Amino acid sequence: MTGPPLIVTRPEPGNAATTRRAEAMGFAVHAMPLFAARPIEWAAPEARNFDALLLTSAFAARLAGPGLADLSCLPVYAVGAATARAAEAAGLTVARTGTADASRLLDDMTSENIRDLLWLCGRDRSEFDPRGAAITALACYAVDPVDPPAEWSALIAAPSILLAHSVRAAKRISDLAGEARAHLSLVAISPAVAAAAGEGWRRRAIADQPDDVAILAQARALWHKGAK
View 1: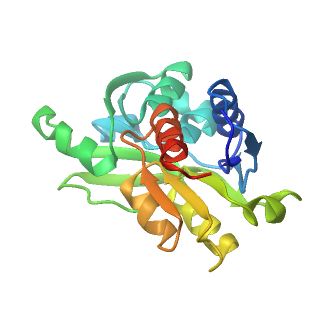
View 2 (view 1 turned 180 degrees about the vertical axis):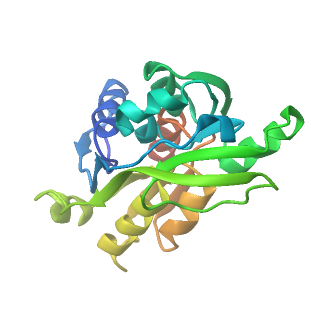
């Protein structure tokens, strides 16, 4: 596939995974992580005080560390297939995988009498409608901004397609692109992420599901629509 570069902005290890998938699809891919994830200190509460564990990012399962074992008795409700896979790899049992966002997942859980949730999350996170559930947020990792790679400015000066995998990424991409973005196309992993990116892009698309397969499918659709 020829056409504009595809810029992957998510932190590692997700960046490498997305880059490999995109290369296999024929994109001219550039790995441009704008954040780096790291574990932070946290202490696991008593698992008996909760009905379930809510995970909205694979980083929670990957970076939580030994304390995660103290919560392994809790069923996991995960947003996205990648999060579910990371939870299973960490030895947790996934009860349900949501295909949209945390609020939609909570809607699906209402018939399961799950009311007290422990949300293992990042230090910086986006809030959502708890749908009446009691949610205790506990940060176990941080995702910090890093300087853009040296090639960033040259890449976004020409037509490109950028992938935004989170609200924070969308805001950062928007800030770095500035007002000169009419030649750039952006693909967001969810409606909330698209909204955070703002207006003024050449084209803006939203993945049908919050995962890599869907976001890359939208990037391919953009290319076919003429984002060249």
